[in-house]
Length: 618
Image (cartoon, rainbow, N blue to C red; front, side):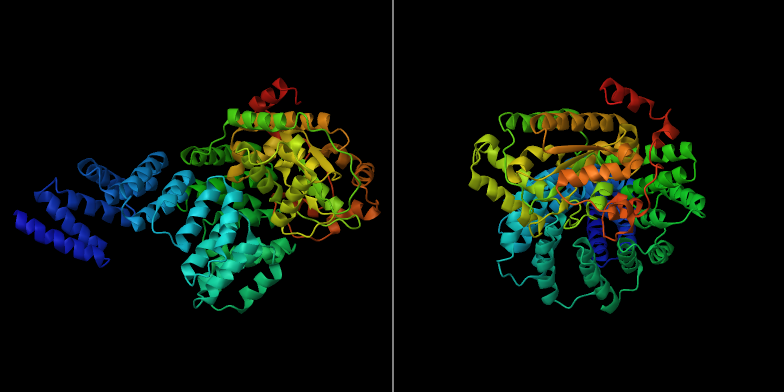
């Protein structure tokens, strides 16, 4: 074809492409390339068509060629990054996304699209830097920026900024939705709900809006409101609504109702990892082998996302464990955790042992001169339950809730916010060191805790396990608050963590070596606090609690300054909603089933056991 004919055919291809006729447009691009193999517009056009048609390998090859020919085009570089992400090369995808954002400096809309993708692949710090530079500003853009700020690690700063946005008075529904999404990501559900309800008032809500609202209410533990919404809003009869209903039933300890909803979800979406994971928590013994095989097959297939396949592998492992097929179980654990490690590596969030040690050293050094202060016993102070995840913190919280006056708080994130904000201010020399804090400054930290917690001050449990890092601050903020430190055989703890999907804040969870290292660091910092504040911390060994429930609960009651009563011996009868893995287990009578489970995997766990032995932990 002549140059003129190629030009005319390219115009036709672009018109077809804009009209959504990707296949026809692709045919035109291919015809051009037969006569002009170096036509960059046709190469780029055909590459984007292949990307739309999910032919990722071909798309990546074509778009790579286009990038070599026009390396300064943000659109071409961006689409190449999308193709790299599709083929699983997430590290390279992130690199090219950052490059595309730089090239799109003069195109705010394009830059926002790129930043959303940067957030999706886990490069929040890069997204935050670019989003902060975009002009002109808007409420919607600010909300997205603060979402990236939170994802990059500055949760307190992000929440403070998001709350300021509530007073902007914008009438943009999209802006309010962005504020709500961003606030929910940092667990500020009060802000998230207020923003979402404003969003709904500015538009005609769709079924998707109602589902998102119900999900937000469930996260905020407003189960009655969520259930009412699911029953009254129109169009909520699909698998997503069924999954919401399943979660509500699960939190209300209605296993049969929960299973009925979950089976409808799986029938419609066979690769729904969340549904399978919840189903095995409530499913009786009989069909477990079939479930294990199905989840294992799905985890090896191509359906769903990489994260879903990772979750399915771990679910299959837990079910194989329940039916005694331990070799199959560990193989599934290994496969799922290898996928998780790769996801963390690509997103730049892999576990860094050196960083953890430096962080713990820095915390301990700040409290060298901070001795425990004597104080009058106060009833409006929390009971903190700390330790490694899966060490028995949920069990102890359930027991404590049986004592008069003690309220369940669950895993309250408030202290994480307060600590992050305090240490950041300390690093910027904007606040005093722990031993120099005035009474007023300590009271301000305490008030900040209750504000973040969204609870009225009182005798409430806070069982965020990783609060073992923050015991120094606890002694300053709550001079008479009890701290209960849970210990359990580290092999059982590490195996139990390894068998489950944990959020990114637990990046150590997917590698046995990392688990041994983090466990050792948790013991190291706890031994420091115990030496510094010997009267403030009660250590409870899980195995002792199981072997002699009455004696241990008497010790707990005395330490927490509450009256003991026999109802705590039947703790499983007390109903409560919980959002942790362990809640289903503590709804059953206490037993020794979880003690020594590691012995089924003694050979596979040998490297872990050696590391624990080397650190004098077993």
